[in-house]
Image (tube, rainbow, N blue to C red; front, top):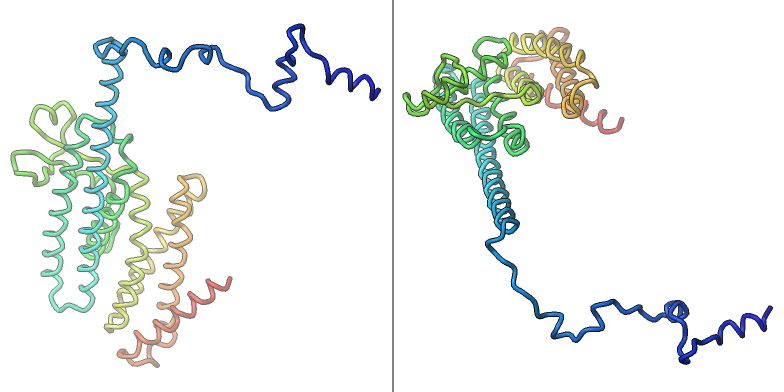
Length: 309
């Protein structure tokens, strides 16, 4: 057997060269066909015809992709501006628990929301001839924050939840009133004729915005207790229970983001219920000016217990 292997290792071809298969095993590289030609001849060739149908088609593809990318970046910037202005509106509305004049803050918040809607008008103009769902990821963050701000303002006014249809009615714009909202709904054919733009909030954005609203209501509840307002925590608690029941019906059957928000909603509801429990049981024992300190300590204890678990 050893002799056979030795003879096989020494086999050569008739011209005295090692077979190609054995050369490959020993680490050599098989030459490609174009390697038989000189280097300079391989570089020489006819130039690509830039006026050919194939090149013209790819140039049009390039221009279309570049335009789509630029539009996506503009939408991301507008969404960031909408998010910032909506957060400022929410911060302004939180001052309503300690401000003496509620109407003044509500009027100022409405002015800020009008500025946010002007940004949404620019988004609607960018998407007037596009499919919104292709650019939805670029604007979803801003739309969720806008829904949170509008629903927070609506709750302060009416102690109820604004519907998605009411929000969409506020996002119908026309050129006749210089970008201000057109409250009368119209069809898409009339929109093109009259120069009207609209942007519809998707159900997922609406649900995620309402889920974020619960955190702001929890902060409003704690702040109102610190200012001696005993009625607001119970109103917020009842409202949050209804919202939590609605989200519980969705459960894990809805989008992943909605089920992810459900845990945060449950935390906010637990904090509000603990505040209402303390007010109901020990409200007469604790002076009003010390209620904020008591609830802040309770909130920290709840956060520590949730962190441990």
